[in-house]
Image (cartoon, rainbow, N blue to C red):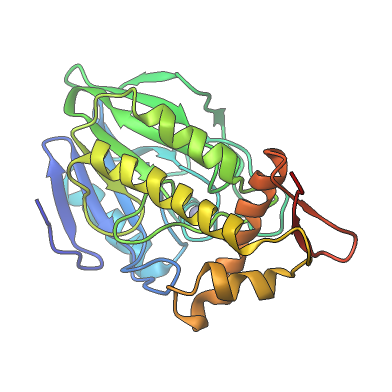
Length: 286
Ligand SMILES: [Zn+2]
């Protein structure tokens, strides 16, 4: 089921779920950020309001009118600038909407205006309507306050930036962690999922295959990073990225360095590599 991604259009995903794509396409956001609208009793939950972009806010308000449901809740998967700031724009029209999510880590990359009324925790369940339940799944990795949400009865997993369509997400330390990311992916293998509704790109079918492939892709990259390291010579991130990401266009290497750094920190945790005082990385001698 591949539904066209057109910014501003209200796209039904199921009987109780709709999608509105934000007009913020970029290298980092792909076609843009997906905001999902979920029927909540007589109202609407907005899951990831996206950027506080006037056109996008207007599109969500129009959707709320069209569906004849006021916005009662705003949920966020995490607090990066392309996912949560739209909450402020929506609050101007629905000041009583409850904000639900986690607080933002202090790493200079987050939406500091985001202050949840309800702090969500792993395993919390919310009754929506028509006997439907939304379950919170804590999924640190891309960033340490990341949440996924599972609409249990329909098996729709909302993954924010934990899993996106068509590319791998950046894991930027210190708030991002590769070991946490892999752990969070493994955790998803225990859930009954029909398809994934990601924060960027189209719906992802065969979710368990996709999750398994993502784990394998990350572990393969970890092996490649390991193979580039030596016990004889310390190397900088700039030096390692050229070899460990030689299958990635050079223009993306600056970005890839973040995920590389996350891989190296995991290898350090696993006692395979270490960083010296000059920010050079070495393979631990056996
Ligand atoms: Zn993000």
